[in-house]
Length: 388
Image (cartoon, rainbow, N blue to C red; front, side):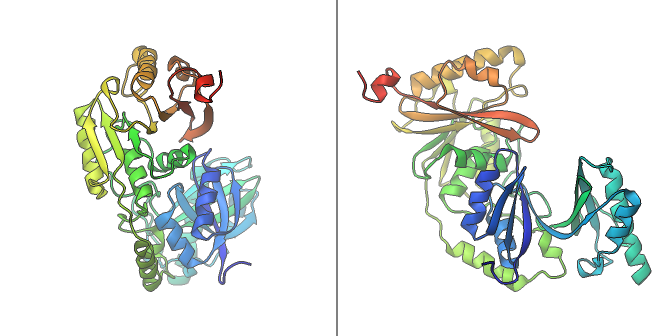
């Protein structure tokens, strides 16, 4: 049975993280959870919408569909957008932005679709109030999302506003930082128990270790954000939002300090430390300057999760040699650990020189990657499993 005043929502994510996101939403109390391509459909009330935006680690943004119809051409789109009572969702003095995605449709130009949508909304307000709302792509009050697939059009309000990977702790990203949503998803996929020591020996700007500390200490990923899209909706309830914030904080934080990051670059370590400090996690995370070849962990067992540099931070000519050195370091220094490596090139995994025990396909934006597990133990596999 659905909770009272329940409505449909769509949580968007990266390809490969749909099941992780579904598990998160179920844990937060969502009903009728259904995985989609790069997303999850679910049902809940306004309170759940607020909670999911604040607490969901693997969602990029949360959409609230408000209209569904078939559309055959741009004029048909304009007409049906015009029939939506936009005055219920925004004021004429608010700024709006529209984005559109199109799949398998006669309408092929997403920017033109967004423009026709803006025109229809603006013309409706002009007829009602003799004034048009303004458009502001960078700082809109209301973000509208148009999704057209096989001529079926879904019009949604974006309740998140800025993407949810914008946690608010990133002082600087350095070169090619890992997306926060993907980092949280990788930690979930690794099966980390939130108690075992965790190391990222090539931590860059610190995304993996910060996300790990937030998970282990039960810190909502959106706790540092100043606002979400729903804050400027006409039906926003400050009292309900305060209740969500109080209940979330009341859940408590268990200080876990077994998270370690390092990088060969002093500049990246400074960036990582700044981000850790902004996230208020200096008591949970240690970040040092170290070459992975010289890294000797303080604990005999643990889990290693890392996104090695490729393409941007090291030259292509050195990549194969780097991955071979990475594998040698694993075997020499991290016996007793599980190592999880994100690699954008499947061929690079072979140069690590270890047999993976698991491979998971995930996408870093449009880039297909492999998230690969290595079990690091002394002797042969037979010895590990007690066979002679």
